Length: 102
Image (cartoon, rainbow, N blue to C red; front, side, top):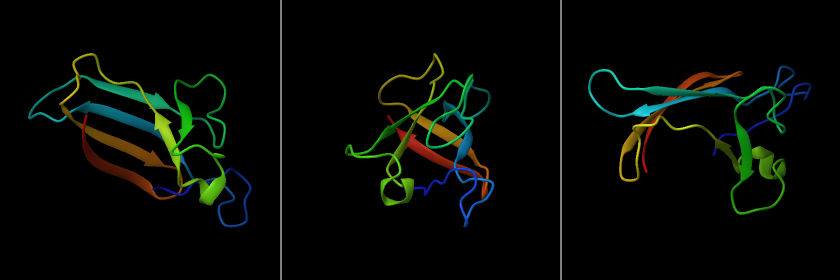
């Protein structure tokens, strides 16, 4: 539940969202990695590969944007049941890494 904010808010004049998300299969060694880019929030921006959705419906800006779902590309070798490594960059806080079972 990462908060999000557009460019120009008092608390976040430069914005607060993930501008890229990289996904790869969580395996030892090399694996294909897919990167998805976002150019803004609450709209993903022009010429980017990502899209947004909202957890539970409602507006994307509701609850400080914490219900924003980042729709990203998966590598071709990832299938249901795999665990993936999510590496994302917040333009305000920096990099995050997490693991998710599909």
